[in-house]
Length: 555
Image (tube, rainbow, N blue to C red; front, side):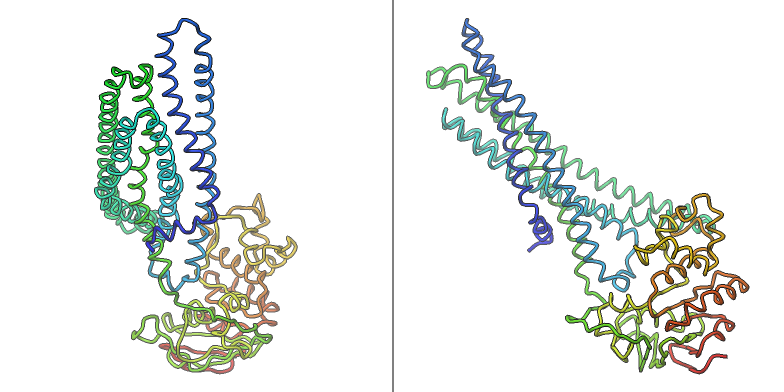
């Protein structure tokens, strides 16, 4: 099954909406055809009668059809768009849940702008599948069949001419358009993704680009990406413009052909003269059913490219695979690492080489060593962000590979040097660790991490918005907020990965003293460059070149 077919398969839960939308679309089209035909009949008939009463039924019919056409079109738009928004939501949730197991190992080499393009622009492209790709062909076939049968009841020859015109406009022209738009559609989707990725890079790195004088170079590259998108869009537009002109010509030729067939029939008395205007106007109105099919096939091309980009990411093999039947979580929280070796690339250099150490439950181990020695990698493996093949990591005697990633991460509270904060309030960022946390608990932990006085100085207190990634906070305030969040999570294992790197020495000492009681009841990994902090631990592990150079008591 194609990628696009698999996406369409996801719409199975919305079959009722699809059927309802198609039925209402058919009703709206048939109401319009009947209105045009009856209007032409009424005008022609009015020229032949002297008693208005003879036209009463036709006049009433025109009024009813005019109202019903508008009502059916409104209901069809309401039903299809309501379904589209539901489908759009479902697709985004489906995509997020599909890529979540890939994070972070499977997404580390992906550009954030490209991921944004996939989850926003590519999925928005797929929303057209329902309104413009799935429903129109169904409605076109049903409406065209009803109109052709009705015309055939008047004269089969006229119906045949109309059928040929409908097939030419609804099938021949869209197929030709699809062939012509396939490459421009794929180029459009790829160019849009590249432009989005560059724009995100430029916005996020604008300060550094300006500081290093590289903003002009990056701007030219972004403009070039924009030009490429414009070229692809112009090619698509030219295809659609040519199709629009060809469609209008075919409708005109069909109308003339119907008149050419109908006029001799009227002259021979085989059909009533009042139908001479009704037949071509009904034919013109019936093309409303097949006109969207050209756009449907063009959107099918962009939808195929967008679906391919989604599945290309989703089908990437996860770096970490949860066991089919996860074991029970541990009841004690000592950490035991034995013979651990790991490299980020198969056959590449080892980041950790035969690492072994242990942390008794409730004690603190300081992990020290130069940058790049493997300290943060050790944390990533402990959290099951990456999987390892050699050695063991056990928590409470349980091999973490026999637990699901969620089970392992529920046991661990982490504060890293590069903490991510959301563009929300201080309270919302703290409540991320526990949605049910009370205001009293929030004030308690903020007091413990020396954040309470700062929050008290803010006009809106804990409701203060902190900006994207906490841009309105200083580095030290961001770190204290991250520590407070880990304390609210209240996990039995605490990992502090350079958590106080942005604090001055005096503030760091006071903070570590204040959170000492919290650490005392937890198994703690204290990763740091500062010897003063290492002396606070029960034991020290010195890491050099991915190896445990020394493992001993703290001082």
